[in-house]
Figure 1 (tube, chains in turn orange, red):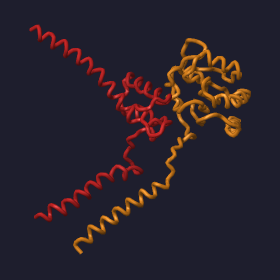
Figure 2 (cartoon, rainbow over the protein chains, first blue to last red):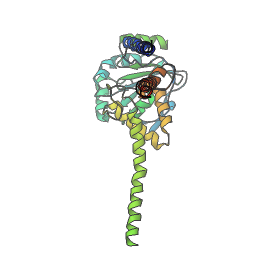
Figure 3 (tube, rainbow over the protein chains, first blue to last red):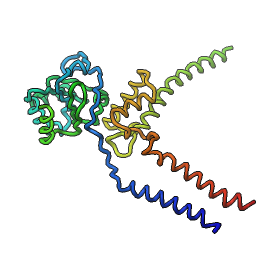
Figure 4 (spheres, chains in turn orange, yellow):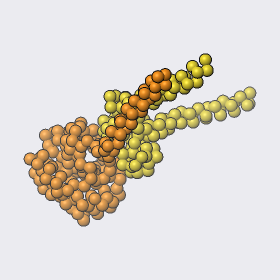
Length: 172
Length: 121
């Protein structure tokens, strides 16, 4: 009887640990960021793409209006894929598209827009990538739907037809 | 007296080095505790991806602005969520994680104590 109590205690203890880990094993370990939380838009100084002056982000984005901030670069292949959707979106009435040119060569970016057309009302340039981090981005391409200076939707990766329809529904 | 002067100069220069090293160390410490979200199993410090390079730049900018470690963590947590930190905070979903090693340590200690020390007596 003397040995049995610690033995029993240990068995229960390890069984409990085993159960917890076993349950944890079945949980998905793929991290999915939460894209639909309304977040306050950060305000930062950004460099304009075709001028040498700087501008505050909140000065570009007026209240009571929809904006799509699109992070793009001429070297990014998926950006080419989503470009036609951006052009289609720019033809919509109640949304303006703001481009954020990510770690790009200015001439290459200009050629890219010449070739595929320019959907952006205004472009800011993010030479070192810190502006994108302040927005909470992971890489290119990425888009942020903004209303009333709040991020209402974050799209990681290129736009597609499904997302295009979804955005159209939101801005109606 | 001559040597004393040299010593002073050397100490002065070494102190400059210290002032610099402190900032660098804090930056290293912070970036080592940040998960590179687009890499697999790498910290921001270890990674050379575009994301990590920009994040390192941002951390050094924030340190220059005078923000402390906790403010930088809170700032990034707000943007990317708890997942970006390697050290998870202590709350009801992580208490088991934090307390299990202590519990195991105490149990092991108790077993050793029973087996060897009480038996010897």
